[in-house]
Image (tube, rainbow, N blue to C red; front, side):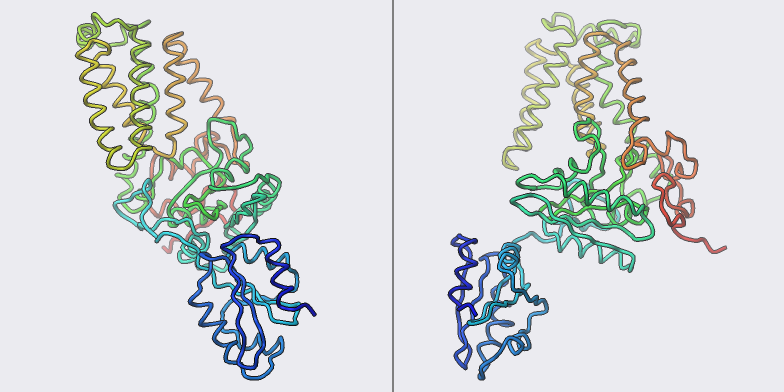
Length: 476
């Protein structure tokens, strides 16, 4: 049988770090024990109260079963493989060794650092729940379980990352979602092994059929109520340890135009807001390009009185309309990036002062025109109406601007047609990105841009191919 020193040496030879603590103590009868844990990941107060104190009070020579009987921790596992002990210690557990025994106990009193549950910064709702996910996997799973108490809820954990060994929990409702999707996700996550997975966006790339596409293949959310609602529709969710952003699949483009608040307000108001978001995105992407194309190729597209005002503003400018718009948009992107990266209060001052001073000075100096600044500013505001599509729409705005300056209106129409044809042919886990509009699913249209009332959502979305089609039954 190995001595206590030999057991400690086997573990410490692998975990060679100063934050791996070894605490040795003895019972009242003189039996020696050792606890090995990572400082900062273990609840030392609970460890002393539930493990060290009961063992220290043993007055007789205790065997393995006697030690197990006095451990008061609610989570105790037995083992004899030292590699498993090393892994459990790395996860935040504590390994308890006894002198003269090759077997050991893993005490699950973990207490990793983390922030409290708070409202997420992007998915803010005036009405509805305000809890948001945190960076702690167990807390996030508890927030989901708090809302979905069903026995059908499954939470399967897989690990990815050769060095980070990051836990990814796959959540789904058994009998509601397509059973092939969770299995496919497990295989895709397992075969994509990199050194470290710091955020769920890495996993999103792993599970995407086209990771280099401009359009994403999985939805993201920061609120457990939205996450649970999507699970109940037949989707599968992924919660990544260390990330406050969860992932759901299959993904449909219409999801980004929906808000959790839509389900807590009047269906008429929700419908208006959804159309508003769609119009805002289209305007935000196309407005700068349309302005440049109209000035260069199709002046008759601009109303005559507005054209006179624009002509008076741009007269004498040294830059062409396309270069002027490029310069203005470039300055906006720089200000936006600076306001995000700088400290909070400095960034706020930079964004406001920079926009006012630079904009006013540029107009006064005759470098850019007032309409260009107004159009770029309004375009930026429009894109932020749908923040989940911000990366895609901001990129598309640049592409459309380049095409408008080169080809004009014909190029805008041509590229928009290509984009639309691309979207209607794309799928994510067997579900078209443009569902329920292409292919047209009349039943799912009740929760498209037109938001039906609660009784109209009696059945789950047909596009998700749920095994359980009825969401609730209306009693007549």
